[in-house]
Amino acid sequence: DRISGVRRLADTLDPRDALLIFPEGENWTPARRRRLIDRLRQAGHHARARQAELLRNVLPPKTKGAIATLTARPDADVMIVAHAGLGELAGPRAIFDAIPFQQPFLVHTWTYPADQVPRDPAAIEAWLTARWSEIDAWVEGHEQRPPAARSASLARQLGQLRRARTAVSPNPAHRTAPPDTRRAPSRCARCTR
Image 1 (cartoon, one colour):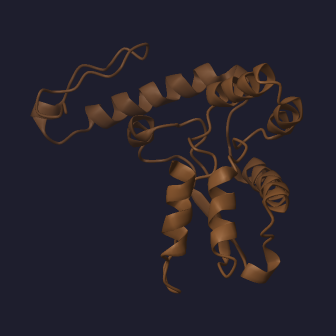
Image 2 (image 1 turned 90 degrees about the vertical axis):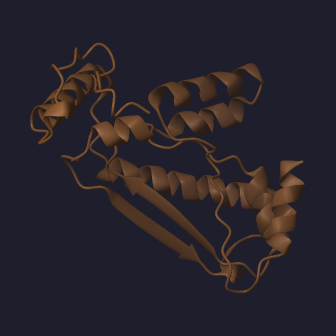
């Protein structure tokens, strides 16, 4: 059972240790957000689906791991880390292909001393929901994500970045014909993994 494993891990932490958990479970994308909201509705979790709909830039937190950690370690401070600047780049390949970034990648942290963090499971869930609303607002103010209607424009821009990057490669063996933006870019045999 994963939750009991998280609880056991939290129990073994030394005072100077840190435990990193990812309450969203996966990176935000428009499709993942939509699927999650649909799954919540289908499962009859209408209140959680409405909360998820209010979050436009993050997925709602899955609270079981956080609850297990915080109830096992009432002495633990909590740091929440959020980032903005990746737009709709969801995954290592898309991020790598967009380098160099055309906008800054920002990271923001919020730290809460242990005595300001609830330890009752229902209170932890409400507290995390409130923090995720704050994160969503922060990302909204700092992310330069194009509107959904311009998502195709982002794909074209990424294609241009790929062409520009391969066109200036100093190694002739790495130069390839400009890729068709409707499919994955071609790579030389030495670069394929």
